[in-house]
Image (tube, rainbow, N blue to C red; front, side):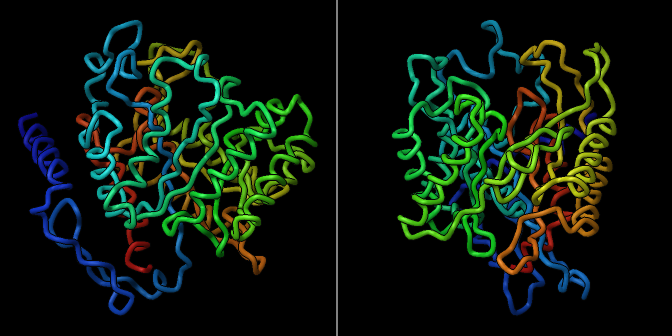
Length: 400
């Protein structure tokens, strides 16, 4: 126990120094040597890539980012007026408990130095402010602080329109066009994620967009066509637009047709709520079945997801199962599984203009602390998720 406390304290001290001006400037990855870079959180890391790694197409590693952690009360750290961090201290993040500039700076440096290629920021429409919970206008602060960070050029970002609740729906064609122009303004930024030259964008729920449009699939398709039209008007290539789906069902070809790819935020097996945590193997096993199901049956490309956990007990989700957090060994095995699936199944990934595909997957999530989807370093789990990403996909950074 004493050794763990010392290690955790050292980790915390290292991460707290990320934004310090006294830190040495990291060595930029070199296309000529591709052998060495300096870690943002420690000593130089030296790696040698074998021929297979050099020839293997790069796999893009993305992590979902939920900016739900503001200082004012009530906030997401509270349930029924009580701060739940006292009951779950292992989830307290080491890089900062709130979405502010200092925290985002540290998170960019930590993620980018461990093989994460991009953050996918959850974006919430703010047009219904009287209907929102207190302080929910801060839900887009993560993106704001990313764009203003002096380190934002170290990784890419993309945007996901979150439409899983009616209070965040865009309620008119005029407001939809205004949102499209805002999203396209992000797409014009040099560090916005592009694949095959095309900016990547996602709508959180394919089915929810249809409901948002009065249960009319044609109106939902028209909204997607409007986004493409406005992108062209603003001088952008045709965006790669993804539709969010659940792991179990595969949408009808007609519903998937307006999209370029499908993907899943997260999902879990239908198990009864229990006082005992289910094993992580059940959670990742469910995801692995989804990868194969979509690889075999999806009408369009599918980007696989990897759940870093699911345990929403702090938020008291009714009738939801909870799962154990993965050990480092289990986490590395999960990442290797998705790497193998991307190698095996040609339908997994993002389509390229030449008819090929770019290998890519998304991790749920950087900072879903209330739900248990956690990649960010925390007091109880340290930085095992980042270490796992570095070990399995870290060569990506060196091959840019």
